Amino acid sequence: MDTLEKGRQSMSQRKIGAHVSAAGGLHLAVVKAAAIGCNCAQLFSGSPRVWSKKPLDQFNTIKLFSEMQKSNVSPIFTHALYLVNFASDKPELLRKSFDSIKYELEFDSLIRGAGVIVHVGSHQGRGWAAVKDQVCDQIAAVLRVTPDNSKFLIENSAGQKGKVGSPLEEIRYILDELEKMGKYVSTERVGWCFDTCHAFASGYHLAETKDSKQTIEQGSLLAVPAASALATIKQLDLWSTLTCIHVNDSRDPFASGRDRHANLGDGTIPTSEFKAFLNDKRLEKIPLVLEVPGIDKQGPDALNIKRLKQLVGESQS
Image: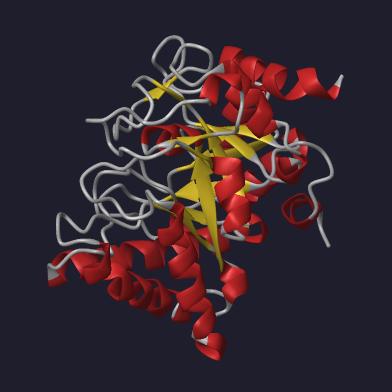
């Protein structure tokens, strides 16, 4: 087993990373991650807002693997296109979404990545019940025609515009349905990613603290008692499939239904919730990846990495 595989399969130290640009070459994403204090990373395989992609054989993986070993940055996650919608009622959009995720999973295999993180789409008002089986079938179909060493990771959503995966129960349903397919789909190739901003925006407190003892106000996204993400993940038995944590603060109030990330400590998520959530022992082996705007609006930076390390380290002293 080489160094990359060891880093991918056995993470003995806390993995802290960020989404970084791969402009100029995949290896440069690793250089940028290491420069701001990361030991893991996330990137796009190309532009996240266009369907077209360059041929896989044009990526220089030799340089990538060399830089990963040199910088000790591993694993690497890939984030899928924002255009993907497995809940669409438009055949052409479904076809493009399928082809796009097929490419991303092949890319994940090529770079020996830790998985492709996917916003699976929006039902656009038709309701979860109308699209849930279609979403499962689309995921299963793309898994059947992609490499066994690639992984599909469902990301929770912020509750906006019918986005699938805002209630964590929807992610549980997808995982259960894929497991029922048995020999047709390897459940080891499916997991999920938890985004702290999305959870907070969709009505989940990260953890139960003195700052989270509230109900969601009438007129906001939901009018029900506020739920704890830690408690809900346990209740739904989602710990074993949780593969990545996106650590982002929120620009908007609790249960806003808005997906707008803020730099750590500059948003509306209480520090007490971040600390209680991030220092839960069940998260110790799960990579933490920043997707914040950055102090200079250039993406995750050294200061945000420092803030994340402080959040994680204080309760460990």
